[in-house]
Image 1: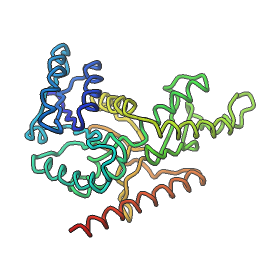
Image 2: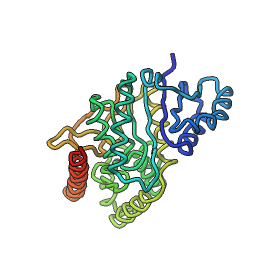
Image 3: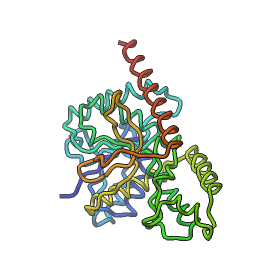
Image 4: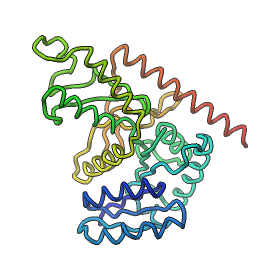
Amino acid sequence: MKPTLLIQGNFDQTSQLVHQLLVMNLPLDCVVMPNTTDDTPRYQPLVVASALCPRLTVRVGTAADYGKATWLVILDRYAAELPLANRIAELRLLMKHIIENGFNGQLVFSGEQDELLTYFAWKFSGLPASQIWGLGTYPLTRLLTYRLAERLGVGATVIQATVVGTAKSPIAAWSRTYVGPAPLLMYLANADADFDADDLDKMSSWLVREAAEQQDTLRYMAIIRLIQATLSQQPVIAPVTNIHEEDPVFAAASPVLVGAKGIQHLTNLVLSEDEQQAYGAQIAEIREQITAIESQQTEGK
């Protein structure tokens, strides 16, 4: 029996992801969950096209499919101008709906502000933290990996880059980036290497600029990469958004093991002093946002 991938989001984004899945032809039962009933017939061309895929099926789902899901990927479902508090209120209703219909798979957020959506989905659903995560900085980490490989003239497979924080404000953890067995920072001390601290600063600035741009395509590629790895029973260590059960709890991107059972924490994140300072400031900001939203919810009762 094939694993079931549910996709929930607006039509444009969902159809883009399904198009990429059709090309990859993964062994999946792909089920789209329309935002509105008007969207249902618009998916028919994708359903028809899936007949050409020996391993992939595409169909439009119903509420009963939540109980069968291996993954439920939630794309951006709202207009950009909808206030965050309203998105969280709608997320509460969605969590109630999927849990009532038996959902017990992995809940994956692929959209903006997944650090807040991941946290509140965990709070509303009652699901284990290991089953709820967002793509976080993983798409940008992959982008940085290939940029570094090109700059250093090596294969991308030997680069182990680390980017933490949030997709909108990524922090390149150079102290935790490796080229083969050697830390990247060793290259700075090598007089023969055409690479120095100025290059790192430029690359960090470039990454921040890329983070401000539209990341949808990068996210879809990242989703497919992680699903491929799970299907082939080769879990990936990736900086996805995950629940940090500290006091107070928050969600942010840090390296964890992503596999068939969800995410698994491996070790504490150790950064350089400057990186830790930037990361700590970002966590404080996330916690402030959580507190502000929770206060609005309390006032609205």
